[in-house]
Every structure is written in structure tokens, then in C-alpha cells.
Length: 459
Image (cartoon, rainbow, N blue to C red; front, top):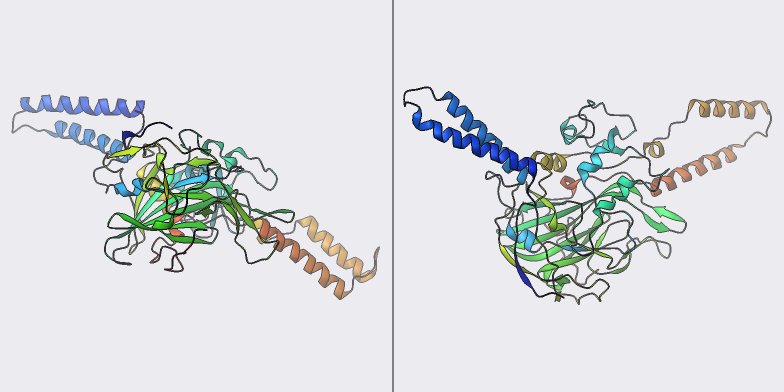
């Protein structure tokens, strides 16, 4: 283990060549304008000079927005990164964290019934499509171009670039941080910081003979509640609910809480182990969480502010650089730290993801539809023309006793029940795509959306 060392948290990554060229152009334009200014008589028309300066400022503002450093944006509170959660992904994980915008590129919007949504070809798969009224609709599903029911090894759904590096703990996935001021909902000084993680695919839990609850697209989150900048509670999402805990009892690495992500379902837990989350005894679904690969979501993030009264999102810029002490990462496979205790945090330098523009941040967070397939052919089955003729022929055979015995009413009822059962089982196997962050009860009064109580023991 290396000695602790002091690092400076930077809000930008390695220089981008295109950005450098643009910045140089801005500097030259401003320099030329300044040199020109003294030679222009006070009474002369300075439209040309004003145009140059205006263009220069516009370019610089655009670059600042792209970097997440636009001075017009509020800065992300430093405590949001200081206490950001660290997540242990399962040792048997097959479907890694991803990016919603890359996911979007491989989808086509469809209505719940499977009918396609008309989108201009030049906007299909692009963030701008999310603001079209026909697309930004609760009944629209971003349907993946390949069907996971016929191909279980779709690279874009496996999202291998999102697999964290075992040394740096950096993933190719971006963490979506949302800050919500709860001063008028809970009490003055209370701020909730949500950390959203997107996974392109959710592998359902294995029960008896198959996986139930598979779905394309998966949004999970952790939420830390702060009072006057100090963490007091945490919520970890799991399936339709999750668990909330007092800050004091959480396992930590330094100042940062530790979560455990279940294999496939990506449900978040406060400690490793097997997690039976259904009321069905014996054969009910069970999540599995352990110390596989450690992921530090703060190493690649974007941020936005959510205003509960209006339900609006505003991009946030990176916090001002601060000095922090970091240490070498923990040893994989080591025994979990006792509740409330701390181990050494991994060395990290939070980086704002400049590849995602402020406008795209808002478009993703504002999307009202579902991030995944509806599997409409299961929920709204439509027989083919051939099926209709076959059904009609069977009815004729039953009426005229042609070729087979006439089915009794009881037999026909049993057949319908059988088809209904198959459809229901298919619906349990293949769930609909999830809603995005805006529908995760960001305005909640409690740390958990349906209660203000905190769990007394880690789960």
C-alpha cells in the first residue's frame, strides 16, 4: 500500500485538441480587437470591433459550457464529490455500467403497443430527438435495435467499456449527479444529492429454470442526505424500493460510503451477501452481492440541479478545485469493514465528463418516456394473418367435425387459460424498460420515497 498523498481535484480532463485550437482562435481574436481599439476614433463606427468581441465571447461561453465551467451555472457543492459513494460490482457481473446517450444511438422510439414513432432521420438516435413532443411522452419506449430474446450477447448491452479498471477504478460510464435543495420540504440546510447509474441491460434473477425480470435499460441510484454540508443519511435503490440508513452505520472508505451492486439486477445494498427481496418463500428471487470490482463513479460525472417546486433541471459546473488527501485502494477480496468503520479510500481525481453538453444533460433528465423495450408483442399480442386463417379453420373443423374431434367448451376454456398463463410468464420474464431519473421521487421528503424511517441494520 502506498503512502497517502495530496492531490488536487481538477474539473477537466486531458486537453482536447479541438478545444485548444478554438481557445487559441478566441485569444487571437481578442488580442487583435484590443490592438485595433486605440486606433479607432471615438466617434467612428465600432461595429466590426463589437462583432469580433461578441463572437469571441460566444465561442468562449460555448467552450465553458462544454467543459461544465460556465460561470453562469451554479457550482456543484464540493461535498457532493467528497462523500460520493463507492460501489462494489459483483464478481460474476456480465452487464456493465453504460451511458444513456450511447444507448440512445442504438434505439428507435416506439409506442407502448409497438407502433413506431415518426422521427426525422437526421434526429434519430440523437439527444435532440428527446425534446420532440412525439418522443418525449410517457407512453414512448426507446426500443433497442437488436432483440435480447434472440441474442443474449449483444455487445452494446454488455457494455464492456463500462467495466471498471481494477487499478484505477475508472469506468467508461458516466455518473449523473443531481442536487435537490430540500430546505422548504424537510428543513433549512437539507440538501439531497442523487448519484444515478445507467446500465444498458438488466439481467433478471434466476428462479427455478430461467431469469425473471429481464429488461433493456436500467437506472439505479444512491442518494445522500446532507444537513449544512454534512452527510446524515443515505438511500440505496433496489428494485421498486430500496433501503435507507443513518450515515453513522454505513461501511466507509475514508469519508465515502460503500455500496454493493447485485449481479445482473444492479440493485444496491449496504453489505455483501444473498438478498431475498420477494415475499415468495423458497423459490423467490434472490440477489447476490460481493466484492468483485470496485467502481468509483466520481471519476467521470456530470451534474445538474433539480428544483422541486417547478420540476426543472439546470446544469451545474464542476466545483472549485480543492485539496484532498487520498490513499491507495483497498485489497480486493478483503473482509468487509464493520458497520460505521472506515478503511482507506481509493486514490481518485473527480473529472467532469466534458463529452456531454449541458443541453444534453437536461434532455436526458427531462425525458418522460421509458429507457428500454416495451416487448409489445408479449403485452399486446397480435396474431398474423396465417394465425387468423388457422383459427378460422379450427372453428370450421369443430363445427363440421372435419379431421378432428370437436373441442368441448371446457377444453376450449382450458386452452385459453394455458395461453394466458404462457403470456403472463413471458411478461414476468421480460419486463418493460424503466423510467429515467425525473420519476425517481427526487422531491421526496424522506430519505426513502415512501417512508421517513431509516433501517436500523445494514441490508
